[in-house]
Image 1 (tube, rainbow, N blue to C red):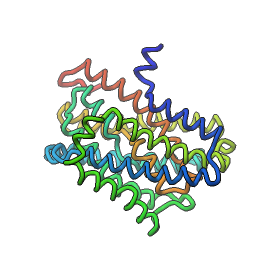
Image 2 (cartoon, rainbow, N blue to C red):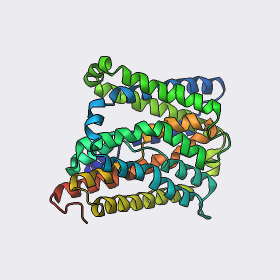
Image 3 (cartoon, rainbow, N blue to C red):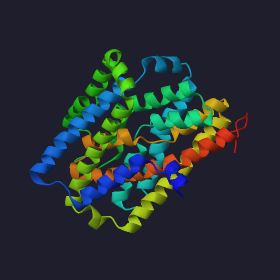
Image 4 (cartoon, rainbow, N blue to C red):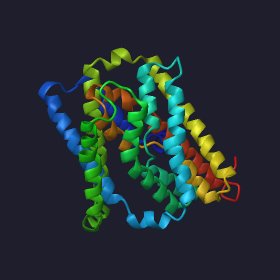
Length: 325
C-alpha cells in the first residue's frame, strides 16, 4: 500500500488538499484577503516569468519539423476537449456549478513536465513531446481566454478590456520577459531547479488558498455536496477515458510511428493545473475561482494515475505494436 501511494499519489496534490482544507477552516477575510490577493497576483507573474525562462527555443525549433504531431496535439487540446466540455456542460443532469468547472477544464492547454516525463517513460519521441507541450502552453495564454470568452458565461467572466489588460500584464508580459532573460537566467534555473520547483508550486498554492478562501466566504461548501464531488470525479474519469481513446485512435489510424503516437496520446490528453489555476485567477471573480478550478484539481490526479499506468504498460510492451491495445 505504501508503495502504491508513493507511486500514484502526487505530493503536490496532497499540498493542494491541505491548502483547500486550510482555506475552508481559516479563510482570509477583509484586509487579509486583499493582501493575499496581491501576493497571489505577484505569484502568478513569477510563475509565468519562470515558464518563459524555462522554454527552450532550440527544442521548439528542432521539433517544429514534426508538425503533424503538433497539430494532432493542439487539435486534441483546443478542439476535441472543448467539444466534449460543451457536451458535458449542456447535459441536463449536470449542475451549473459543475458544468462551469468542467467546461473551463477542457479549455486549458496541455501540461509540460508530466507530458514529457510519461512520453520518456513509454519510449516516445521526447523532442516532439517537448515541442508539442511547450507550444500548447504558449498558445494557451491566448487561446484559453478566447475560448472562455466564447463558451463561458459566468458573471464577471469573459473578456473585457480590463481582462485583456490583466492577461497581458500578468501572463503574457512576464512570460515574454522570462523568455527574453533566458540567456542570463538559464544557468540559475538549472542550478537551483529543485528550489524553483518549490517556488512555482508555492505560487500555485497561494492562488488556490486565495481562491478557496473567497469561495468559502461565499458559501462554497453549502452549495457543493459530497454527491456533487463524486459526480465531478466520475465526469473527469469519463472525459479522460474518451480523450485517451480518441488520441490512441489518431495515433494508431493516422499512420504515425509508435514514438509519435505516444506523444499524441500523452500530450493530447493532459490539462495543465500549473497554467489553469493562475489563468482562472485572472479571468474570474475571486468568489468563483474555487469552484471553477475544483474539477481541474480532481482531473489532475486522475490523469497522473491513468497515464502512469499506460506509460508503464507501453514501456513493458515496447515493439512495433506496443501502443496498439
